[in-house]
Image (cartoon, rainbow over all chains, first blue to last red; front, side):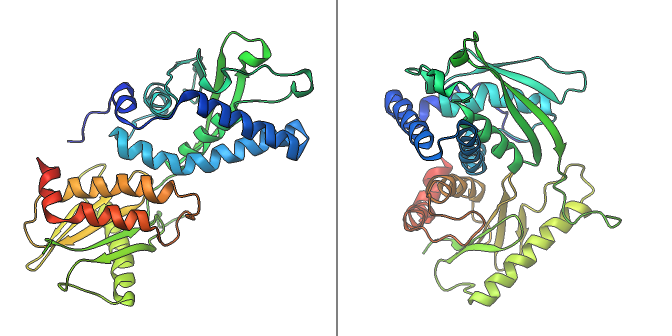
Length: 186
Length: 141
């Protein structure tokens, strides 16, 4: 009998080593600022942040699985809940709510009321196209890919652009079968 | 002398990325360890297919006259297995602990390339501590 998956990441969050939130926020700010200087184009920065997030995600997923005792999710709905309640709590210290499910149960939104990445950020006019937290979407995409789910993650609402919350849309594109050896007729 | 004979880590495509033996029992040269790793990878996959139990995730324990082999596979497909003295206890806990060490000292090392052989000194040091017999017993409590 596998251990029962925790419904919240509070306990894991409390037991892991943490760094000062300001150090984290300011470091991320410095990274984004440097990318803007280096790449000049806001679109390129968005792309780069997403790629960096992806590279983090493909490694982070193992730490999540190792330390959270979460077992295999039965469906995408459960996956979304686990990301929102356990994953985000464990690594970011916040939780999200899961809403806006479509009829097929393959697209949903993670709504973040609070986001430590943007504590001191005001987006200047020159960076209006910037998805400042694009690294997060990359992390989610990368992590899910390592557990056989191809997803597309996009920002719907962004507080830095005047919205009332952060909303990430997660769309399940396809589930790659992980069974090996593959079926004989394939 | 620790009851653990050797430890293997296999990446999701079946390549051996880490091998360490503890003491003389069951020691293997590089070729044999690579062979055993890919053999185990295939056997593990076949066992999933052959198992009468729905949702089987593969062999977890192989018991032989001279050794036990305990295997743990993470949801991302990386396999960890130890070969140990028959009847050694708490190996599941040890494997779970090794998985945590792997996420901390291998995956978080920015210079480690995913799916490639593990050469991380910090991992070696922490692993050595974890494998020590009294440590295994301690973790079991």
